[in-house]
Image (tube, each protein chain N blue to C red):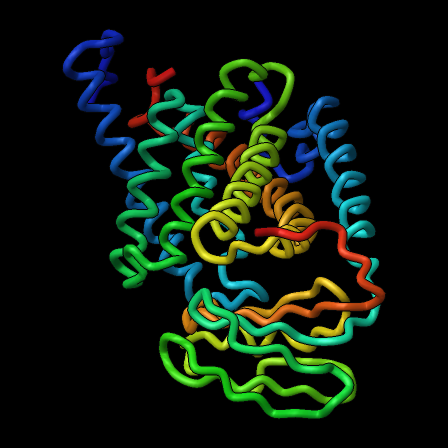
Length: 184
Length: 132
């Protein structure tokens, strides 16, 4: 097939965008599901590899694309694992949305300053902070929960860097694929 | 563009100067917050809460095996040698048990599914803050 030259805002461009986002959501949901099987010291302390797809969506498209991937990933993923509407669902949802918002906004404004690694680290911190606040607000109303914060932040730094590198590789790779060409 | 680096050797190119500054700053912040949070003293008693209601306080220096009725069933809390830990709990992933022993003032262990929370209190009454 020859290269499609889609105009921005055209029907074709919209279909392309939705198809690409569907792929990213599917991949993110799969990673989310597999990750649930990996044991971690604290239940909602996850590597968040699915966030790579959120970063990718933000980098390829925009803020809303990232938010869509993050939201749908948590929905689909939790339905598969069977945690829908349980505490870990709300904790995960708050983290995913917070990181998507922070990454989307920071990508918009600091695109040239930070690489995807920096954006991803910011997102990981936002995610972990939101999760601790959610636990505090909804489940354990004791300020002692914030004693866990250093653990979350240290872990967030590590996963943020790893996911950022993953995002750089994935975006770099995706931009070479014929199906994704002309997107940006 | 940075995103186009495809080889592992070029990994270094992924990090911009701003990235490195950000990572260094957050690392220092994390280490600082860790030293703030972990400097607790040996606690005097444990305070147990089940389903949002107080379920009793027990002295840490007295060895004990406490049954706490939560939402799912009975959690057993083991107090031995001035340390408390979850001995058993009717939850699925047993995170509470893997949290290990708590003994320092302000430390906390919780079984979220069973809604049982154990906190360490006391230790010269040096509360940083009292909530609710």
